[in-house]
Amino acid sequence: MIVNRYKFRENIITYNIVGMGCSAGLLATGLAKRLLQVHHNSYALIVSTESITENCYVGKDRSKFLINCLFRVGGATILLSNRSSDQNNSRYELLHAIHDNTSSSDRSYNSIFREEDNAGITGVNINKDLLAAAIDTVKANLITVGRLILSIQEKLAYQVPYITRKLLPSLNIQQYIPD
Image 1 (spheres, rainbow, N blue to C red):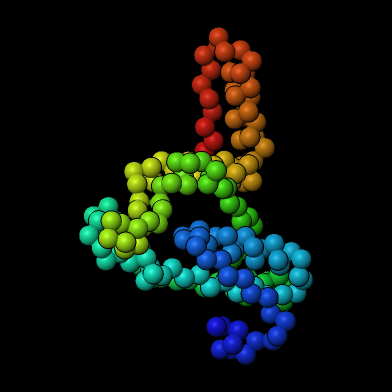
Image 2: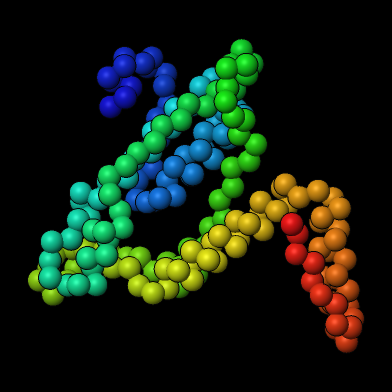
């Protein structure tokens, strides 16, 4: 729609990431970063929207009403560039785009799912495993971010007690938690 509305060139590449919910914007940012590494002197426009119109539940199953309260219509847009002439005008620099996938866990995968109720009305069911799945995902992402941003001293301060505890379990050494 944007390419047509603003009459962009015909060599514009577009990607449609649907069904990813809240993570679609982050996935699109990672994709755009990788594309900009390949296509020099280029722009990447990310338009991320969340619309629950299709998933608004109108049935009588109370377990499916939570989705009507949690999610609404929203959106965000970001323009990324790898052009050296844009460096002075930029507000931010994208250093890292990470995404750790936890969907191989059945607990994560089944925490939100779409299904029909007894009347045949489709709705989204959120179960109590969502919080645990979110915590596991945040934990995995924090580990990845830590590897990228922590200094060598912080990494060593974490690794030395960790290795010592594995080699000498009889010693009661506290694990270092990076600041």
